[in-house]
Length: 175
Image (cartoon, rainbow, N blue to C red; front, side, top):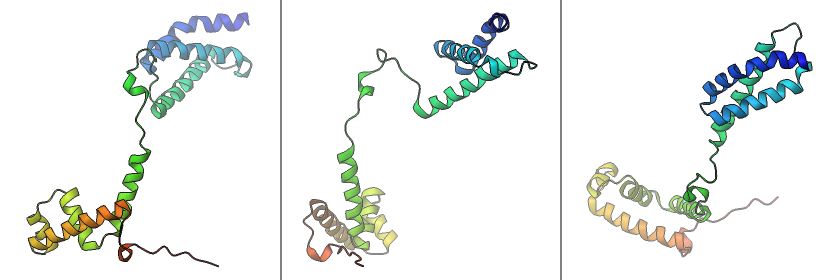
């Protein structure tokens, strides 16, 4: 144990410098050095006695640092709860919005092609009536008519009041 301490203790300032250069955060670097020293002590028996102890300890530090950096990439940097903005602590529920979005996409799929294309060109792509008419190769009046009918049918589909003729039958396979 004493021989290990004589080898490892002089490395600590260099380990801290290397950890700080990797993590760019003093507190995280000190934690990394602490973890490296802990791992070095608990696994000292696993090192190659003929090998260079300095290289072995720096390898442990480097591998732990890479693991931490990957973790930060996946999870984001931890923030002290006292320093955190309250608005970041919670988010409004998104389930209803996602369900409405899914319902809208389903309703759009159920519109006739000519109404869907006019609705998407005008509402989503922000084309003018004239531009949409040129894209579709139809008169402007037809674009306005299809848009009006498409909006009305989309509203009925979203409210669940679609006429029977526009509802897509649900077919099941029975064996």
